[in-house]
Amino acid sequence: IGLGRYGVGNRSAQSLATLDSAVDPETGDRFCVWRLSGSSTSTGALPPALYGRIVARPDLGADPEPVAAKLTAVFELSSATTTAQRRPRVAWTGGRWLAVFEESGAIKGRWFERSGAPAGTDFAISSGTGGAEPQVAAAAAGASVVEWAQAGDALGAVVRADGGVGAPVPL
Image (tube, helix red, strand yellow):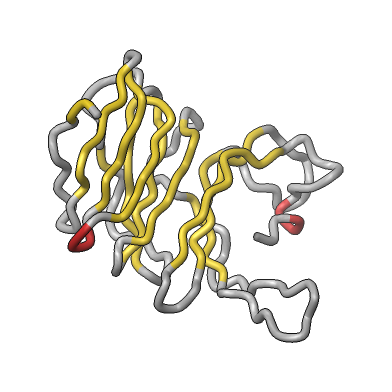
């Protein structure tokens, strides 16, 4: 995903965690998400946060080590300015990307256009605290199913393409 120029690498105290990606089956483009933690004194280093980047499907021709073209710059997933975010996940929903993540014990989401441009701000998916380990999968008609652990239970909710979120239900 090409983070060396941002100070992430062997000589940095920063590290990547929770790397996830989803593929747009029509174009082969991939939306990669990750959490960057730690600090770096490198020039141009990114602060700890959740990030994303859209990369093109690599050309698997004769090159034994193909490299995917970076279609966007690195961008922050969340519209909030907090470092209490972790475990980003992403899914392609047939027209847009849905990124989900933990934030201070709540499960949040944010829609992105095919290009990687934000399609709104963060929104709540879970209705309480203690939410952990979110997962997201595409469902019918551009909706997604988000599931997470909370207070020893597995819960899930449908996130509709219009931005609405269904009530959490036990799984």
